[in-house]
Amino acid sequence: MEVINRYITIKHHVDGAPQDSDFELKSSPLSLSLEPGSDEVIVKNLYVSIDPYQLNRMKSYSSSQESSAYAVAITPGEDIDAYGVGKVVASGNPKFDKGDIVSGLLKWGEFTVVKPGGMLNKLDPMGFPLSYHAGILAFSGLTAYAGLFEICKPKKGEKVFVSAALGSVGNLVGQFAKVFGCYVVGCAGSKEKVALLKEKLGFDDAFNYREETDLKSTLRRYFPDGIDIYFDNVGGDMQEAAVSNMNINGRIAVCGVISEYTDREKRAAPSMIDVVYKRIKIQGFLAGDYLNLFGDFLSTTCDHLRTGKIQPLEDISEGVESIPSALINLFRGQNIGKKIIKIAEQ
Ligand code: NAP
Image 1 (spheres, rainbow, N blue to C red):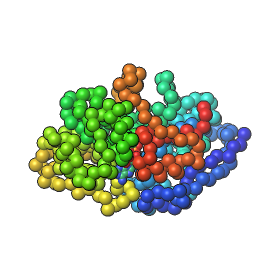
Image 2: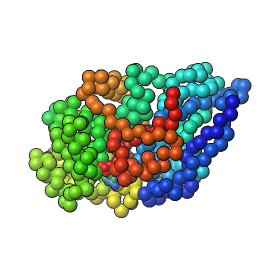
Image 3: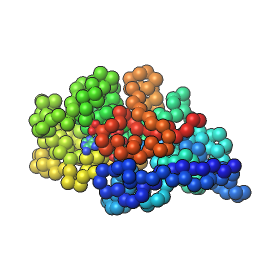
Image 4: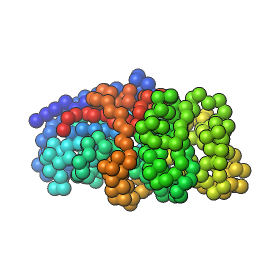
């Protein structure tokens, strides 16, 4: 049987904020029967993840493209890989059977042909919706868990600040830190997001950074006794303000610097005198380096979901054609929680 596989590509490199005109929906015929002897797996994509780092892959140059296998440059016109969940429709690989539900590195499209050695695993949904396995129970969740517990090593009662706090990673950092026993303040880009952080997710406090004119004094207001842990999703002037409000022996996990992804001028220049004299540890990290924690992360997060200690926060759009606007809107702050595209019904 042959289908028409629709997928998203970029028309050219994208060096500023992404726009609709940067993307193209392409289609090509795909046979769903494998050649005899083939060891490929054909997956019907069900859910794919939308993540800010994809923009760094689309640039004509970003140092990230050379530093990690997860961030290699995307060639204009070619299909784009992304984490997701799917269903096997044909398999020449003895590890997979037709009908298996799988997760791994798929494509921003309707089908993925996974070559031998590609990242693909059978998935046990454990009673949770499949979409959770593209976000909260996958890399977004692992990023929050590893960054908070391995990089920041919180102690009960410590004061934690999270930026992009209603995003995919940020909301979980705040929720994990609350369950652990920390005092947590988040910032986000609208009144509605601030209300959700406090009322739905149980953050101790939250503020809209877009309404603030002097971020150093804003943070002083929210943390009169200083910040012990800053989970940095945005970089830029928020990172500078956080450093100047850190306590002695404070820890900063640099998870991402989204404010820089669309504007190189936003690069943070925190006070190094503060870093030295307050003995602040600032550490970048990649979730992919912490796969050894995946088992612990998964069982802890599943328990918290089952007991209601953690609320899932998903923002799901439908159809392959909605992928470009979903990515564009991450940089406009229009997502609430984990942005996922539902490509097809199971
Ligand atoms: P996300 O937070 O779900 O979405 C991005 C959010 O960032 C937006 O909703 C927006 O919320 C905020 N934002 C966008 N442009 C901004 C700007 N110029 N200044 C301040 N805030 C801005 O995305 P995510 O997947 O959770 O990723 C968050 C960060 O973690 C990103 O920097 C990403 O690259 C990084 N990350 C790192 C790893 C890793 O392994 N290190 C893994 C996953 C993600 P507002 O309404 O608050 O503006």
